[in-house]
Image 1 (spheres, chains in turn cyan, yellow):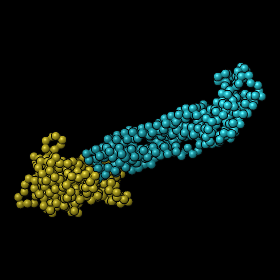
Image 2 (cartoon, one colour; image 1 turned 180 degrees about the vertical axis):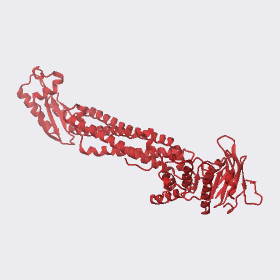
Image 3 (cartoon, chains in turn red, orange; image 1 turned 120 degrees about the vertical axis):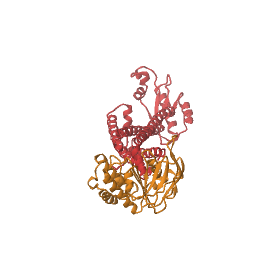
Image 4 (tube, chains in turn green, blue; image 1 turned 135 degrees about the vertical axis):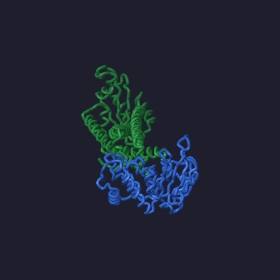
Length: 297
Length: 239
């Protein structure tokens, strides 16, 4: 495949034989890490947008209150909420929805326990709206004692912190994998230089510059890097396709993240095999030129 | 072309192999470098093809003091020097054609020119039928001729040959010497290292004789052969 004329029989080196597979594996890992980073970043952004455009208002039940007074209290609260800046709509959750939300704590039969359930109002905000939550809280407390306004800030911060950690880990893994690729390629190049020291000496003695020798190693790195990049890309594509199919069939929460894969993500991912080839070539050039400078002639 | 001034050679912390060597080789001259095995002929040649530096003294090639040259300056000088190594140093996985083409490819000569000149030269040294042969499939004499062809393909200004007739019979040895003389006539400065006194005796070229770590310049054509240590070869006298 893409045979180059070379004065050095680099392809016959036992150390270089597995280089395309090693690069392929590294490219695969790097692409999966990058895909995870992209998906998490995308999911985090979407999640943040969704949560920041919603409020939940909880109106605790008042013991002994009749239904008319309850309805009046709720109407008053809804009016106050609707008058706040950036509010698009409000929706009072029915008892079934409230029971479902409380089921982790009260069990499936929450409505049959006779426990007074709070009223919950889901509030939709305009994108980018920043209502004065403190004022809203005070006004609601007057209209409905014990009213709580949850802007999801604490949960949002914790969730974002987790997602950003996952993202940083994925990016770190990507950087480590590419650095490891560079290390392996440099090692193989130095080994090749050592194996073919006598031939390198001959080409030097007939007038070759260090760059002439380095070009031969670079050509090999390009070829092996390209083969490795194709192997790694193909495996990563298969993995991502299967992960997408799995998530589409209702896989677990990790699998669901892959459902968020979008077509534009292919382009940043496609840069990784290209980067791997470039890194291999540059690393080999630097490693070989460095080693040649230390040679006697 | 070549100037040695008080040159001393030693390997590592070992004893001096050569000491106080001084001579000049004029452009277009032809010299035999004669001495017993181990006398230091190869070491002297190594200094000339920039494979080592002197422990002391000054070596000038083409008017440049090599002891102060940067490593990056070596390739340009080496391209003006053709070397026939004692052990040939052919690249085993390259064909005779590619071995001979090596200096041209390194110099960036076009492939079309390489494909024209290299077969011509290989035919000239009698290897027309062996263009694609790998060195391992060639006899010692054939390998030697490939090595000679590689050394002369780029028409070097200075040709250095270390025992170039060591692996061939006397007949081929003499023919190879005529090849070197032809190159010399075209202006190449030639230095042939050999311990074959019989071969040297057939020619009248000047001799650099190494004995006891010193060099004496001898001119066989002089009425009484001169034998001054570290003598100078005068321009135009060698060929």
